[in-house]
Amino acid sequence: MLAVVPAPVTVRVPSKVNLHLAVGDLRPDGYHDLATVFQALSLTDEVTVAVADEPGVEVHGEGADSVPTGASNLAWRAVQELARHVGRDADEPKVRIVIRKGIPVSGGMAGGSADAAATLVGLASLWRLDIGRDELAKVAARLGSDVPFVLHGGTALGTGRGERLVPVLTRHTYHWVLAFDRRGLSTPKVYGELDRLRADGDPPRIGDVEPVLEALATGDPRKLALLLGNDLQAASVSLRPGLRRTLRAGVTAGALAGTVSGSGPTCAFLCEDAEAALRVAAELSGAGVCRTVRVAHGPVPGARITPTEERP
Ligand code: ATP
Image 1 (cartoon, rainbow, N blue to C red):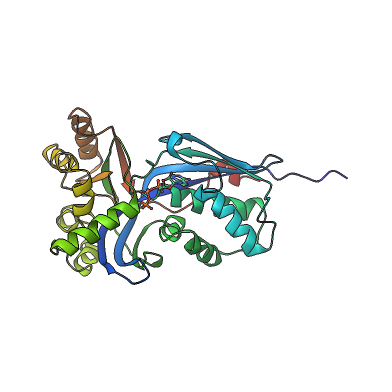
Image 2: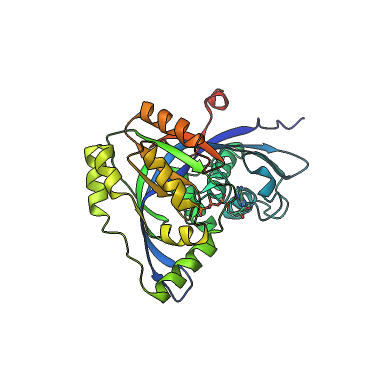
């Protein structure tokens, strides 16, 4: 009798922006405690998982050339981690992963984490696993601190290394313009630069998270704009001084406020509404301060199987 090969599964997964990113001092284990508010954005990657005799990873799209296709690809690590978790062969999983990137690589928008989260959701379906989102989130946390958030999506408060999540209720769709830089920034380097800046004389730290949560509850983007804050911004700007010009250009173009997203170098500009975002994007595109400009909105859901694949 012929074995039935399950159909490939495609998952769409959001990027993230940090509305608030407070970074604690360097811990003895080399990590930093974080208090962050994540928002999932409509700028997405798509990941297809399929049973295949030739296992491996293929990457297409935005920044594909700088993404590893071997065992260090976070999506492949997700295959191995989930295989181990459910007692399948983790050394030779017969799975092929095709990643279509829309999220900039090393851009501070959790692109690799997104592909790992998408792979977990895709494989759970492909392998017909009886595994709930909570259990999947535990596997996700082992792969990286941003992976649980892009699995869940929405808006959430993250503590610990960012992996302990509490959903935040929001009453509004926020409209963003994203400015991609010409090259990425390494997250560990940005944290290292922050430690160096702090050793040289403590740069100002962002305020408490509560006002951000209150602003989100009102749904007023102007209130939120006043409170966007990121302790890593000084470090990203120190490594990439041109970002100062990009941040100024977005506000000059009409954004309510701009922030470096996570460890950067992508700059995220909060706009009044969808129309304003299109105007800001058009003006920023012509300003010569970045490689590419995109509009996006949030919050959006986390990693989800795309509708065509959901049909029986
Ligand atoms: P974060 O915002 O979570 O700090 P990031 O968005 O700045 O991360 P990523 O795009 O996740 O950065 O890439 C970080 C590094 O991981 C790069 O060196 C990249 O080559 C590597 N990498 C491994 N797997 C992937 C993947 N599937 N997609 C993108 N980068 C990957």
